[in-house]
Image 1: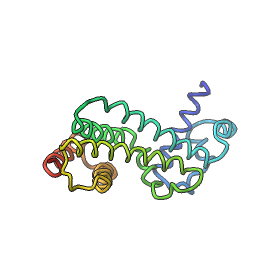
Image 2: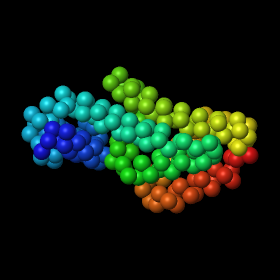
Image 3: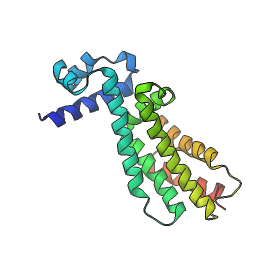
Amino acid sequence: MKVAMKREVILNTAMTLFSKKPYHRVSMDEIAQKARVAKGTLYYHFKSKEALYAALLHEGLDVMILRLNERFKRDDPIENLKLFIQELINFFNEKRAFFLVLQQEEGKLFNKKLSNCYQKICTVKDLLESLLKEAQSSGRIKKELDTKVLTEMIMGMIKEPVLKGKIKPDIHIKTLNTLLEKGILA
């Protein structure tokens, strides 16, 4: 197996394990065993469990931000808002293990080594807020609504159904978009 492929196998295996158990209950031995790699190979790629964990979060967030940024090429701010919602719901459903790990850690990302992850989460929220502000300044969203509050509410409405795992993505997207259109648009 090529070096890059081994690294991916290790990351995917670790992601699955961390999504099922808390950080402190997953060992490097277990990751190596489940990934079917030698412990030396594991430590060749990641100096510690903390480094492996940070790489999982950093790389997952980078992919998420890249996917979100690729979607917003339209002039219509409401269409961009709908695309944001669609892309984030689809991403979280496709990368469910990553989403579950991220949810476990979101409140703890002030740790020095993970503070960059916290900044990346802020980037996602900032992107959503900028879409809301753009729609608001164009008269498409009610002026009296606070975009920071809307951002947190929309993120919650995106994350909670994915966390529960009981709503199909297409129904989730349609329902949230309908709620936004009927509830906050001017």
